[in-house]
Image 1 (cartoon, rainbow, N blue to C red):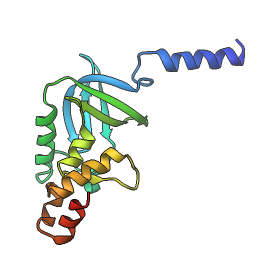
Image 2: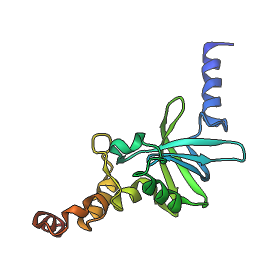
Image 3: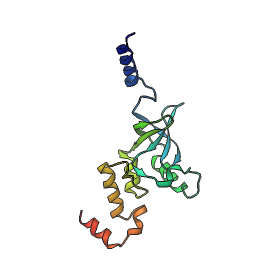
Image 4: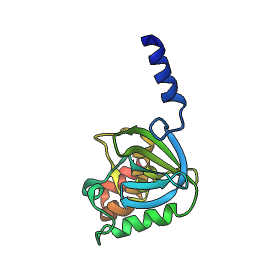
Length: 163
């Protein structure tokens, strides 16, 4: 078999196979919340994928398991938010064990919800998507979550009124 045919065959398999290695989107249900940034998604009766949600700046939370007392509430909120409903998963990149991307539920992106509700700030070192910064501004101007400490500060009021 010529080199060109091998490359073409590999390309065909990569593009059209139904394996978890090549897919960029899935449908499934939440199996478990591992950390506030990492979720296991059941995609069939026997298979699940692990996805790390991109966009928020999790700080130290990304490495902390949901069994830790001060992290439990964030994990429980994710469980309540996604529950038993059918969700979509979009994959942007992957490594050996984990896929990286976002969750689509009820027509919303999970990363945007986490930021607009003030759970986290935008990871501005890695992401520059306007929708994430719009979500952060919404949380900032409404004093949600991590922004609650700013309530009543003149510079916040004037910054939000200029918009």
